[in-house]
Length: 328
Image (cartoon, rainbow, N blue to C red):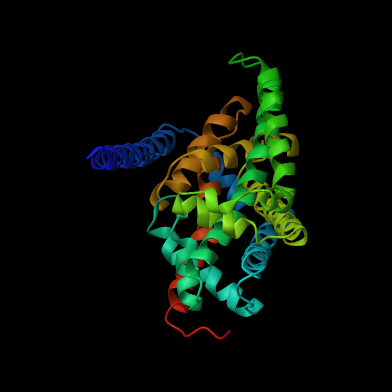
C-alpha cells in the first residue's frame, strides 16, 4: 500500500514538474518575441541601418561568403562527433552520419530543447541499439554544452567586470568557473571513474543505462568528442561575430568576445521550444549589446539570419533527406 502511495506521489510530482517546465518554455517564447517586436517598433534609425547594408564593402561580402562556407563545416563537425560517439556500438560511414545529422533536425524542431534530435537520427539509421545510441549522442551533446558553459561563464565574469555591474561578488563567478573547469577535467577522466562504479547497485533504469553507455567510452573517444565540440564552438562563434559585424560597425572583436559566449550560455540554459530559439537568442543579445550602443535591429536581423542559415536550411534539407533510404 505504501509503495502505491509513493508511486502516486512520484507521478503527481512528475506531472507538476512537466507543467512547470511547459509554462516556463511558453513564457520564454512570449517574452522573447515581445522584446524583439518592441525593439524593432521603437527603433528610429532604420534609414541609417539600411544605408549601411546597401553600401556593403568588399570585406563584408567576403564575411558573408565565409559564413555560408562555415555552414557545411559546422554540420561536418557535428556529424563526426555523432559518428565518434556511437562508434562503440555501430560503425557507420561519414555519409550516413552527415545525412542522419540533417534528418535529426526534423525531430529537433518539434521537441523542446531539441530533445528529438538523437532519437530521430538513430531511428533513421535503423540502429539495433537505438536507446544506447541516443544516450551516447546525448553525452556528446553534453560535452558541447559544457564547452559553451565554460566559455560563457568566463566571458560573463569579464563582462560584469568591464561594465561594473554590481550583482554579486565577481569572485563567486571565478569559483563557478573553477568548478565547471574541474567538471570538464573529470569528464575526460570518465573511463577511470566509470570503472570504479558498481552498476548492479543502480536501481534507476535511466541512470543505469546512462552509466552503462558512459563506461563504454574510452579516453581517445572522449578527447575526439571534446576537440570536435571545441571546433564546433569556434565555428558558430565565428559565424555570429562575422554576421554581427556585417550589420553593425559598432561591434568590435572585444565586444564580440565578451557578448557572444554569454548569449550562447544563456540560450543553452534557458528552456525553449524551437519556435522561440531565435527570438530568445536575439533577446539576450539585445540585453548584452545595449550598453555598447549597438542598434537593436542590427542585432535582431543578424541573429535571425544566422538561425536561418544554421537551423532553417538544415531543417528543410533534413525533411527532404528523410524521404530517402540511408546508405550505410
